[in-house]
Length: 356
Image (cartoon, rainbow, N blue to C red):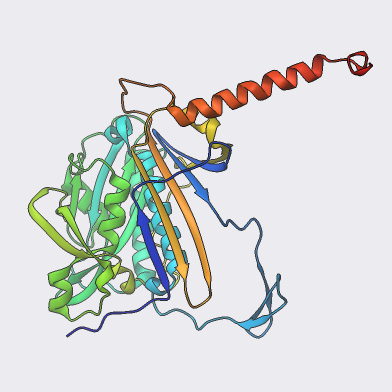
């Protein structure tokens, strides 16, 4: 029997969230998607100060501690890995949704041999990107996502590339792409699994997850809570006849420490981040219903720490038949209206109005 891995962090997710209309939220503008986050405990400055001899001081308490041992793979850096997954999802969502998908060309690059040399991998990817832009336009932007896969019972790297043209992507024969790459088989597509609506989420899953039966066959330790069911084939995006059990995040163990998973060109569109009052955000989205909402509660029992992250997403490209404030929106609007009337009245009053 395979022994499951344990972690001190505990995650509880609920498929709804309640955000007060006068709370300050963070807006993430990702093309036609607007994501809204309310984080209960959010650091605005670094809580620690780095010291010599691999030590640090906690500013709040003055306590001095030692840094943990260097991680052996990316899966051990949970916070950094979560941040990378979020960045991948956001940058793809910003550049590859709606009408922008027609500008995209999707290429998979593989090696004939087993590829574990990450320095050579990075060099080969840089050379390929330079050649591609030389032949097909310097204004072509790209997203590159190296990923480990099993090859001859060993872990070997291949890379998913998204090339984004200024206008509609031209047809380029896959044989021409293969000549530019020169290291193995390439696969070129213009429609990446048309039934996958959220490409960002798809790529994050593809880079991290693995079918449970393969994990068991290879004898890889896993945590039961990471086993999930999906309704589409993570390899080709097609709908499955029956759900497939996968182990979330298992591939992350085969990325070396500090390995840069997300590689993008400098001219790529970046997500826009803003702070706003929630009632102002609701007005901005025309009071439509969120297409996704959740509440994530993170607890670290060992350290006695917890945080709550509330998230909503709005698809601004999706047509809506009814767009009017709900009861909570109306309560906030009425309160704001009364406040504005009171402020206006106070502004118009003179000192004589207070004399009796």
